[in-house]
Image (cartoon, rainbow, N blue to C red; front, side, top):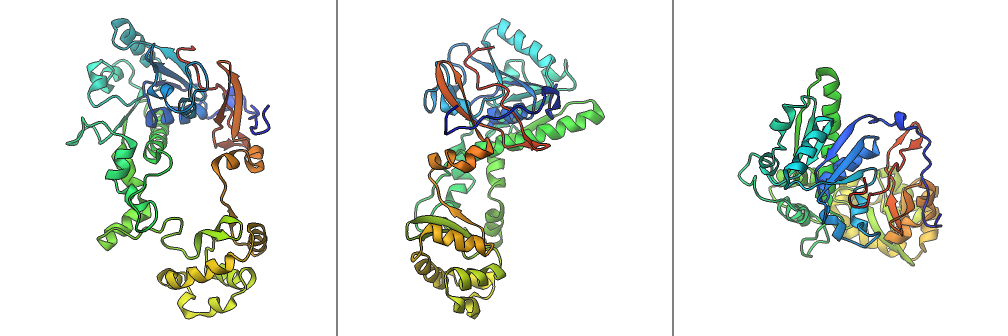
Length: 385
């Protein structure tokens, strides 16, 4: 066991997993669809991933090589699955997939609009032989709109949904998120919808067609920023690492590096000014009396706070902040965070030997009855099963 990874103990029996006995046929590729299927696998479903016999999922060629047919990108979204190689361009391959669909509870696909129907794998064709099938389609822009045939990509939607415009520092060009946030949220939303359909099936016995569009999900995650834009009739300001509505709340520079400080209410602000930075007069200043006041007058307040914080080390500030009950923490590098004592004790990083290479995966974040759900299967090599 590496010192930088933690094992997940399989305290839960297979039949104790929430989706034990549910069969999922994963016909999707890249990120949003595979993420949806992985969530279902994490929760205990049996997930069979169908891949092209030669090239497999496109992401087997993305990221860093971790095995003969695996990469870091593929591994990130295909744990707790098996892989079978089937050529959908052959009658034999299609017949095999149709037979698998008849025995499945859930099917996840992200073919281009109309592609599944042309193969005979559309919802209407498959539900005729399996009325309980939950059929989950992930598209770029919805199957019924004017852009139905247009392929969807995370970066495109980040631009078109306004996400890049709200990210980054004021005065700088639009900035994409560090991860493919639209794809990941779409996959998570899709899994939630599948779970709802499975629950409804327990009452009706009937399956449902579930559809998620990347663009819809991109708009959804604009959240409070999106509503502010509609209320104001224009783009809200960008605040970078600061909060648009709460002050002081964001990333600040101590004398030896950055840390996050989140002063969430007026009582905390008074303690922050008095006991942390030694400026009690700031708490008494009517310009900063309430959070709304501080938000309106952040340009006057934040430089004063920044100058005081820079006089201390991160360790000194964190001790003061914690003593006053004000949430705060260091800003870590990604590798530093993943190899920290906090991560090690959480059990969120797991490794195992496969394909003659050490591969790391992140564990599912869910806990049931105090136990983290286990990694039952590492991401499979192409056609392993």
